[in-house]
Image (cartoon, rainbow, N blue to C red; front, side, top):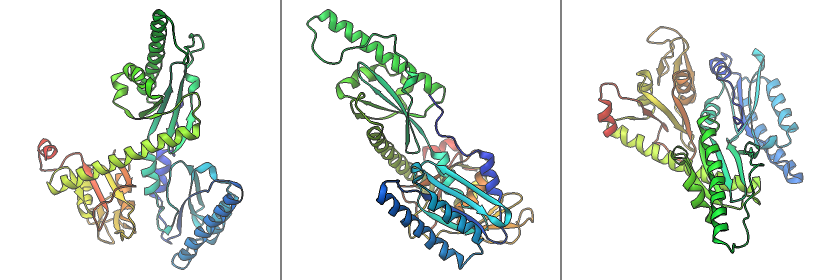
Length: 392
């Protein structure tokens, strides 16, 4: 199977994270192009352009964004024909000769920011959180493999070469018990052939999770052949006819399974963190507690929720040693270097986390406690026995 959708290189993201503009003219834009469907598509594009103009207009009065960047962005939006359903992400600073433009999969809300740094938290969280789902469709006569990543689906059935295998009839009834047993054995070998390929591709890291689509009466035979290692990553099943199912229908069924899994996973993780924080175990909730945990190297996963009506707090990051402060000191209290002030705290926390094997996640379905909507799941808690903290 293919390795999936390409990702923005880590070094490029690190370079963008280090950028700083004293003039406050770093411009960040996220928007998803509308579907290019005749008149409706043209009207949608005009609507999106108007929303971007409105957002940029508000910022023009409060930040010295270069008009060349703004005009170039509006020209880019006007020229788009839907962008294949992908998100257009632009980072620009004309004064320093920077224009970075990306088309990324997923689903992020329209956002326009102008400040001293680029807004990277949504992009990096989306890229880190992207999972690849192998969708296996099968009946007694055929098998199909598809890959779902970032709400985009592609077919890779060519990797299953069964041309030399005898095809199995799927309609009619047998008059011979011997023939029924022979066909049953062929079906079992067919499902075993598929299961072996699923294991092979998983072991070679071609996908992260599995979804199965089949007719209900086929499922027991398919499930019986799945290897235990593959069964552990099976996240759902839907009913379909593998020979008739279109990519659009497969995407709809599979994405519903993925969305439900993400909701459940988010909810469980937040409940675990909030409960652990209350018990002084492996959880931290609120900006000050998370900064303290990051400074001690305790954090496994950094989370924030882009919740409406939450006034995001600012945070400061030392440009030299990476020290974090919720306050706004001019100089780092540890090394004396200059502190950079980020209007959204998660941008400062994210830059501290880069390069430290810390997972970052933006929550889409689950809220975090006010007022900060920031939390962390910890590897350990300094001064507390880890086994005891886990038990709590």
